[in-house]
Every structure is written in structure tokens, then in C-alpha cells.
Amino acid sequence: MFEARTTRDRIGLHVLAVVLALPFLAPLVVMVSGSFAGRGWSNYEKVFATGVVGTYFRNSLIIAVSTIALVYVVTMLAAFGFAKLRIAGKEVWFWLLLAALTMPEAVLLTPLFVTASTFDLYNEHIAVILPLAALQVPFTVLLARSFFQGIPSELMEAGRVDGASILQVFWRIVMPLTRPIAAAIVVLTLISAWNAYLLPLLMLNDPDRQVVTLLPSFFTSQYTNDQTGVLAAAVITAVPQIIAYLSLQKYFERGLAAGALK
Amino acid sequence: MSTTAAARQTPGRSAPVPGRADDGAVTRRRGVRQASGLPWILPAVVLVIGLVYFSIGYTGYVSTLDWNGFILSPSEPVGGANYTEMVGDPVFWRSLWHTAYFFVITFTVQTVLGFVFAALMHSKLRFGTLFKVVVFVPTVLAPAIMAPVFRQIFDADGQLNRLLDAVGLDAVSRPWLADATTAMGVVMVVTVWQWTGLTFILFFAAMSQVDPEVMEAARIDGAGNIRALRSIVWPMVRGTTAALALLGLIGALKTFDVPYLVTKGGPNHGTEFLGTYIYQVMVAEKHFGYAAAISVALLVLAITGGVLMSIRNRRAERS
Figure 1 (spheres, rainbow over the protein chains, first blue to last red):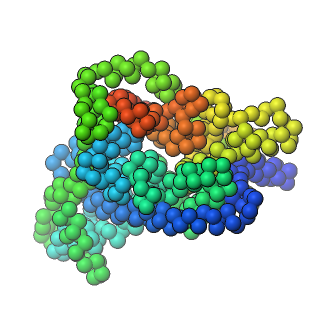
Figure 2: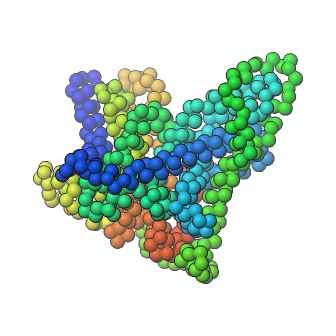
Figure 3: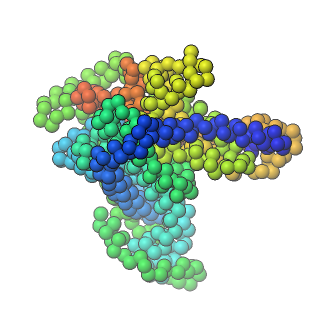
């Protein structure tokens, strides 16, 4: 896009890129260097010594995996139905789902809190998993539906002609073609479930049940004026996310891009 | 959920049925389109209606009550009193105003930064991937994880002030989070830091569609870098910009994590958003009816915003 014919211009472009990129790097540098401030690695030892890090990670993992599984199954079925099957009042159903797309979590706070207390689901992971999935599904269905629409119906008709049931057509012909969109759905749901803060904050009060996004608050309350511990906790939670992104870079970028444009 | 179970039981290991071309000689059985799709969409519909629509209805109901949220405590129907309170509540209007200018400023800054970055990354830079990763990483990090870091950076004796002092700008340094205006600035900086990566990736993808020959022709006609970007590339990625505007608007209405964690909505409601205000009214003040009324207002805004923006986008696409 930018054309640089002379060496001076080329250097100029690189300088511009560095100047623009540095502010994005700076907070991460502050986080890492701050976490070693004072007593170095023992800041980290202190964080692990509390014994809660593993629990928080395990809980985040349970919530993320369950949400992904639920969203994935529900989305694939619905997207196939919406894209390829006959449904009375299809548009109405679809718009019902789409209207939930813009739903801010805050709207759900009162009813979810009351419902969870009524059914004794307070502090249960399911009280976070179900709302997270319900908020994610409209989005992923919209995404997957247009992908399914791109699969030629002739391919499925052919399967039907060969005597396959609709379930077999779905499972053997359609599903193997959906890997790109499946990756996008998994990544989008992973990010929203792993990074979720408001719902766990409201629903999970018991430290045995809490998730990684609540870890910094835990440390802030434990060591009021010890910023190094808080930063070490932040690094510990950020590192797996960065590793996941770096190793699945392509899927993260495509998944988020696909999600945003729909 | 019977569909789900059935789908799981179907063996997936056997070879896929070969797709045979329909030569017309084969008698057609009931085609795919004729099968009923209702059972297929049912799990999604039940999940979304069960949770989201139930919640909307329930919120609407609670918004007419005076209630402290405890199941056993008495609730008193008060009709529209919560809404009357809302209309007269300066904090509610301030939250709305914050949301509006937060959206305008963060969207503008992100668009400019993301656009310039995307153009730079299409300019055959060395270490291009490195730049891309640096800008995109914040997008995948939880705001909740980064909040303590930003609190420290903008602290009265945090890294930013130390940097300013070091370069002789001590006149500028101040306790950033203690003043409403600068605290709002911090909330916006954190948001821009987090989401520019997404804007960048989308513009980057859109720019791949720009025909190099058109760019070449423009250059032959004497257009410089800035001119070519403004007159050719910018109009061609307008669809992306519109999608980002919608995303940004909804995002602004949903804003919670950053102001809640970095500034606690303060000082003195200076960075209050609708989400943080609802949380405060509900959890801290136990004023469930009023929180529900604000939720209803937020919901109406979110849906109206979404509908208006998508109508506008559709018109823009047609013209």
C-alpha cells in the first residue's frame, strides 16, 4: 500500500511502524518487568504458594470446554437446519435468535442472579456456562449458517439418492466440510469463555469455584499494597493465552475476523 | 436433545458416501430440503429463548417492583416509578453520555490506527509478522487480566508519570485515575489498546482485495501514498468500516470490565457506564427494581442501535 522507492522512505516506514507498535508492547513489558520487581522469581513463588492458581485454571478450563462443546453442538445442528432444511416460519425463528445478538450481559444480571439463587445454582459452573453459551449461540449460528449455505445442496441430494438418512447426510457429507467454520466457532467461544469476567464475578463467590479472570482481584484483596504479586498473577494467566494465540495464530485471526464481519 | 444424542451415535468413522452426480435417471427420493428442520434448530432456540428471552421478560417484570433481590423479602409493585426515577437520575444520563463519546472517540482512533497499520503491513515491511503479533496479542488477553497492569501504569507514581518526569515533561504528569476527565481517557486508552488489533486484521483482510493494478494506475497518474490511500483504498474498505462501527457501538453499550476494574466507574461516577451502573445499583445498593429498569433501557438502546446501523449499512452497500 505504502510505496517506498528510496531507502530513506523505507526506513521512514519502518520507523513509523515501530513508533505505532511500541505503545501496544509497552503494557506487556510493564507487566513482565513489574512482576519481577523487588524479589524476582520469589514473587511468582508467592503466587503459587497460595495454592489457588491450579484451582482457578481448572475451573476456567471446565467452563471453557463445556461452553465450547455446548455451543458447537447446538450451533452445528441449528445452522444446518436454517441453511438446508424446511422449517415453518424459518425467518421468524432466525430473527428471534438474531435479536439476541446485541444483548449486553448486564441485562441478564438480575434474572440470572435471582434464578440461580432460586434453583440453588449459585456458585455452580453451570450458572456461568449456560448464559455464556446462550449469548454466544446467536453469533455462531449466524456465522455457521452462511457457511452451510455455501455447501452445494446437490452434494446432499446425491447422498439422499444413495439412500442415506438426513442424519447420515449431515454426519458423513456435511460435517467433514465444516472444519474451517468449526475452528472459528471454537476460537471465538474459547476467547469469550476464557476471558469472561462479569458472569463469573456475579455467580461464583466461592474461591474453590472461581476462574482465572478473578485471580488478580483475589491477589489484590490478599496483598493490598503488593503490586508485584498482582502482576505476577497477571503474567501467569496471560502466558497460556499468548501461547494459545501464537500456536494457533491463523485460526485466532481468521476466527475473530469472521466473527466480526457477520 | 434427542437429536444431539442421535447425531453422536451415528458412526463417523466409516467412509463418506461418495457424492454422485445427479444424472436425472435416478428417481428422486424425498430431497434434503423437504425434511423438517425444526428438531435441528430446537436446542439453539430453547437455549436462547430459555435464557435470553426469559431474562428479558423477567427483567421487564422486576423493573416494576421495589425489591431488594432476596427471594424471601417482600417486593412491592410500584408501576413505572423506577423509570421515573431513571429519567430524573443524573448518573443515568451521565452514563449514557459517557457511552456516546466513548464510542465516537475509541471508534475513530481505532479506525485510524488499524487502517494505517494494515496499510503498513501491506507495504512489505521487514519483521511484518512481529508487528502483527504485537498489535494483535492484546485482543486475546482478558481485560480483567490486564486491568491491574493499567492501574499501575497510570498510578500517581506509575510508569507513565515516571516516563514523563524522565523526559522533562513533569508538568504533564498527574494522578491520571483521580480526575474524571483523565480517568475516562485511561478507560479509552485501554479499550483502544485492546481492540485495535481486530480493526487492523479486518482492514488487512479487506485491503488484500484491492486490485494492485488500480493502485499502479493511480501512481502513474501521480498520486502519492496519502492520496492513493485516501481516494482508492479507504472507499474500497468502507464495508469493513461500517461493520466495525456496528461492532464498536454494541461494544460501547456492553462496556463493563475495563471501567469496573480500572476506575470502578469513578471518580464520582466520572467513568460510569450503563453496565457498571446496573451492577452497582443491583449488587451494592440491592435496588433490584431500579437496576432492572436501567437494564431495559440498555436493552432498548442495544437493539435500536443494532437495527439502525444494519439498515444504514445495507443502504450504503446498495448505493
